[in-house]
Length: 494
Picture 1: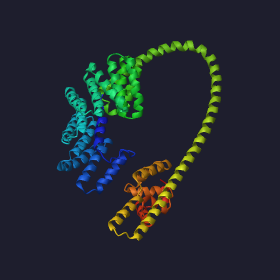
Picture 2: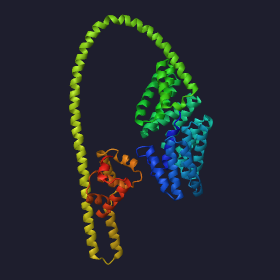
Picture 3: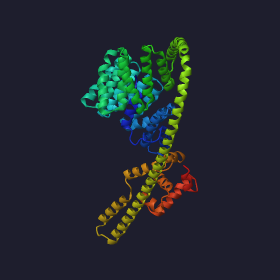
């Protein structure tokens, strides 16, 4: 019933600023921070990048690299008494050992993270770290100590009205009671946690609550009621897309089916459990699968005898059924051909609509670039006229000129809108470009996108807020980095 990985991830996200969770994968993040570390000479900045790199190494299963990066960053943070970042780095180490199924070390590093976050006096983070420590203790089967820590976290969350942590604390307490075998104590905390999760529309927490509630109902022999909660959890699991939840539901479902004597379903769920997490396929669980398989085979032999008798009775209906089936197949074939014809027509219409939409996006981008170029041309004209006026107050003149220069630069929202439209036209272009040429700057990446759109020099200059001559120079630098003589041809091939 453990969910420590999700909690560690949540805890880590409180401290990471400017992280790459929005990028297209862990490996992209690792490459980004690897390149960043190489360029950084400031020890504090380099340590921050190493801390993030340690986390992503852990996420990607590269334990040795994660430990090495963390070990290099820790002395810098200790020297500068940067307690938040020390908590983050120890939390990353806890994740590494959690993935290795080493509960003792997971508990040790989670406690270190808690010790450092206590020094920050940040109540919300302290509550979260306390809860994480309780989870790691429970994972190490130290249930009494875990429940005491959860009680401390619960008091803090209630005092500060921290409903986000409160729902997770309730759910983790219920999970610990389940692992401890105190099944009568599960319902109250799980119902409280589930109610808070539903109120905040937290899909992951609702999933957990439904799964734990179903597990508690199994112990009360309420199999049908438990099945309803499992179905809700399974429906939500598809939305969450987490193998940790899928693994746990499969494990609980195995017990649910086995206690009812449905060994076929129990065997299927147990197989699914091993497919998701082969690292946990120990001797005890393998023996359990073998026992379930033996029972399944015995049931199958009984069914085979029954089926043999049924076949004798069914054969006399085969001729009549075959005739009817042939007629049915002819009808189905006709209807299927008709349906395929309709679907083909619909697909053609959708394809034409998609082409129209992409053409409209291209037109919008070009129109936007032209508008920006015209705006910058007007700004330049105003700037020249302002200089001609030769205002006596030189400070005011310089201030106005500075404001005018700032007006040339596009806002983050405008660049974000441009990128969304561009990626509709050329999906994955930026990701593939970053993979092939990882040392590109943001400006060079933006220029590459505009070249891919066949923007004119004036349009590029307007978008970047620079002169036409600067555009030519930047294109030259970009060509040198890409190491290709024809930028348009190269970028069109990505």
